[in-house]
Each structure stands twice: as C-alpha cells, then as structure tokens.
Image (cartoon, rainbow, N blue to C red; front, side):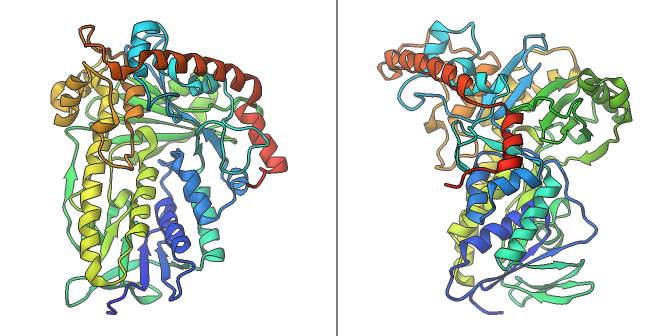
Amino acid sequence: MSNSIKKIIIVGGGTAGWLAAGLLAAEFKHAESSIEITLIESPDVNTIGVGEGTWPSMRATLRKIGISETELVRECFVSFKQGSKFVGWRTGASDDVYHHPFSIPHGYAESNLAAAWQAKFADHPFAEIVSSQFVVAEHGCAPKQVATPEYAGVLNYGYHLDAGKFAVILQRHCTANLGVKHILDHVTKVVSADNGDIAAVDTKATGIISGDLFIDCSGLSCLLLGQHFGVPFVDKKHLSLNDTALAMQVPYPEKNSPIESCTVATAQSAGWTWDIGLSSRRGVGYVFSSGYISEEQAERELRAHIAKSVGAAVADSLSSKKLSIRAGHRQEFWHKNCVAVGMSAGFIEPLEASALALVELSMNMICEEFPVDRSAMSVVAKRFNEVFCYRWERIIDFLKLHYALTERRDSDYWRDMSSPEALPDRLRELLVLWKSRPPHRNDFIQVEEIFPSASYQYVLYGMGFKMDASALPRTSDNLPTALARIRETAEKTRKFLSGLPSNRALIDHVMLHGMPLI
C-alpha cells in the first residue's frame, strides 16, 4: 500500500455517504496530484428518512459542494426551517409551547439577556423577548425575501427536505461535476494489510477495490469499524430510553396549506412526535420507548395525533414505517485507516436534528486535517477521536436537557426520563451552576460546539427554569444594554412581519423564478 493518501473509499451512500464524498471532492478538486474518491453503495439499501431536518450549517456545506439552492428547493421538496417548536414538554397544558430558534439572541454577547428577561418580562416566553425569529416562525413567515440571494438570509435558517431526494441530488452532482466514482455493489469481504489496516474491500460483482483511507458510511451495520475492526459500541440506553420510531408521510389538506417554519416536537405519553413540513407533504413520526408502550398503542396514538390536522379517515389510511433506534456511539470513530461517519459512528434520537450536523462536522474536520500520508494519519485519528468523544457527550447533555426539567408526572415515561439517575453527571452539575447565572460560552470550550450556549438558554428558559432570586446582580450583566437590545428586537420583529413572505409564498416563487445568485 502506498504511503501517500490518494485513494479514498466510501462504503455506503445515503445522505451521509454522499455528503462525505461531496465535501472531500470539493476540498481537493484543485489538488495538483488528484485524489481519487470512490463510493460503493449497496443497490438494496434505502435511505433512512430520519434526517429530514438540517441545521443552518447545511447552507455552507452545499455552497462548498457547488449545489444551487434553487435546484435544492425544486428537487427535494424543501422548506425553510427556522428552529424547533416544543409542544407539551413542560406541563402538557394547552399553553405549553416554547421555541428553540436558529438565530442567536440580539445582543447575546454583550449583556445578560436572561437576567433582563427574568426581571422584566418573565410573563412572556424567553425566545419571544430576545429573538425576532420566535414571532416570525409563529406567523409562518420565511427567513428571507424573494430578492435575497441563494444561501443568504434575513434570519438564520436550515432546511426541511426529503432525505431520499436529497441523496439523489448529491449523488448526481458528485458524479457529474466532482469526479466521484460510483459503484453499485455489495461488499462481501474486508481485506487486511500486513499492518492491520484495511487494504481493500472485495465486492460481489466488481471484485477487489483497494484504497488508502476508508470511510464507513454503512449505517447501523457499521460494516468496517464495527464488524471488521470490532470497535466497541458504547450503549447509552440508560440515558436515552427511546428505542423505536414510527414514521408516516402525511398529505396537506389543501395545495396551498401553510408550511410550518419549525420542526414541531409534541410530547406524547411515552415519547414525542415530530412534524416536518416539506413543500409537498409533511413527515410525521413518533419516537417512543417500547418499555412503556407497545408498537400497536404507539401507532394508535400517532394516528390520533395526525387526525387532529387531517381527519381520522386520512390518518387511518396512511402506511407507517418502523425504525429501530440503538442509542449510543462507537468507543472510537477513527481506527487505523478507517473512520466512521453518520449512523455508523452512532445515533441517539432524532431530537434537534443532530445526525446530519454531525456528518458535516466530521467531514469538515477530515477535510481540514486530511493526512498527506499514513504516518500523519495516526495523529489525525487521535485528535479526531478526542474531539468527537467530547461532541457525543455534549449532544447527550443537550438532548437530556429537554427532558430534565419537565413537570409532567402523567406517565412513568416522563417521570423516568426526568429522574436524576437518568441525567449525565455534567448536566446535573451545570443545572446547579445555572441557578446563579445563565449558560455561558465558557461552559462549552470548543470553537465549533454543535449546540452553543444560546441553544441551552432557549431550552432551559423555555422549560420554565429560573435563576435563584438571591443570585447577586453583576456589573457584567449590563442590564441597560440588555433592555435596549430587547427593545430593538421588538422593533425588528415588526419590520420582519411586514416585509417577509410566507414560507409557502417564497417556495412558490422559487419554483417559478428561482433565487438570485450572490
């Protein structure tokens, strides 16, 4: 095997595999000595549609790969996602709603907005006071105007999209424009080198395919890192009880039905439902724990939930798709010359759409620290493993925060999910600290935190958390500035509501006329 890293083999397609291929090919398309990228995809494996929501980072990813945003909207049933909306998570009462917007609060870095909110505006939702995006999303407005160029926004946004069609558009672009070689075949055997690396994979029809770096995007089967190398799986079942999801595709009642600007997560008896509004349909599913509800009961609950918006006849006619969830991640993610990306690396649950964001973060680091030869690979692998062990722990902390503060006691599920024993140690310690001050960027030490401190504030205060009244006021709170920024936010909100089109209106415009180029 050559000492230089020239041949990259990606095993597995779907959104993870094709995003990996696209980002690598785009990164090295100007390399004087070209890098050869081959993606091997089983013809029998369908894309799992759990990742239909993205983070705003996907805009930079697709711009780098070279895909037009107009093309994305037209071909992938895209709508614009401005965050997440949580219904019934705190008490289950009719007014129990809060938002986690994508836009950072106005004035966040220069003052203590949380202290100002608690002192002056505690009878209003935190997100409504500190971010215009709360009201914009509630009114079904888009995050940009018809004249806003591709990938630019008046407000921060990601996407709701059809995962299967997304994989298709990525595949077409990677093979037609970025030189990625695509092989539809079954991997039957992994061939080892003398030093224990993977030398090649053997395939059913194509035969031996050799490489220098192998990226495992084979999903839950984890063909290379898990099955071949035997890297252990770190089970997180004790922290995340959800192990099953039922998904359905729900038609809109009318062709011009409004499109939600957020992923709507609604608490149920033994889990929660997601509701993702695409331009052509909704994707609705129930994530639950089989230890608290049977699959048949969960399906009845899901259909009853859907019936509220489309009627019982339509809800009862829909077919469902079952997905199994094994909460956890690999003990290490880069072993020898193999790195796992996507669900091969791990998965916790669909909450907050962290799966695709982790693919982007993984590939960004691989691109930035790409080893020029095998001797550098061990150093890169060590750094990669350290970073992503940290990131997986922070993902678990953040997802558990959504359950930790619930006041619901109407089922064993909610009681158990919020019990102190079900919380990570670090999160328990932070909740003590946050009684005297808000989450701060110093609580999260990485430059590229997957969930920044502002996200923790949105969830923390959305769930009704309050700082102790005895907490000492601080000069650094800068309350006059905080109050000024809150007033500015209210004025911005009025302007946005008068100037932004609806989600549906913007999508209809893009379908007919496209978006301006930057």
